[in-house]
Length: 163
Image (cartoon, rainbow, N blue to C red; front, top):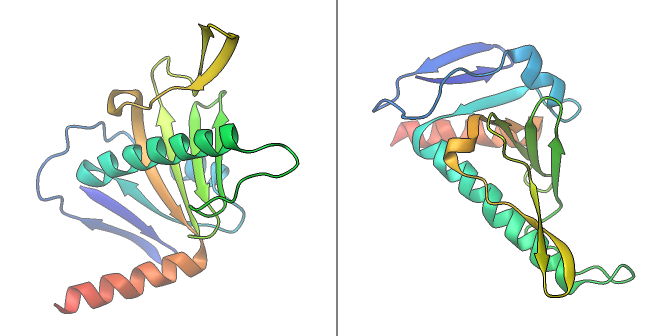
């Protein structure tokens, strides 16, 4: 079951096949606590959506790491994916991936011992590398949208339902 929370209520849509991922999602209060200011619409990600969001995080993290390696503090490299922010909230074990240009913030509740960074010894001393996020690490994935992005999403859903 996929749950979509709208400003005007909650809608339940049938999932075509059962998800092999956990479905015990955080409460709405917990979700909105971590949401960007003024963003109240969210979609709980399941099945292929869930897999896609974990892949998106890893791709963005790789790109951000590559940009950081190429840039200097005085002249940061332009970010082709827009203004993305990755934040790890260790206390509640929430990983945020927010893209301000898209008006979307993916929230991952991580239930394992996973942490975003891994210290490793290299030939040039100690360096820190971002760890890959695995499906098994994530208890819940929720996509939160800005009011503008959510409005566009609803229009797209209405267009799609006409066909």
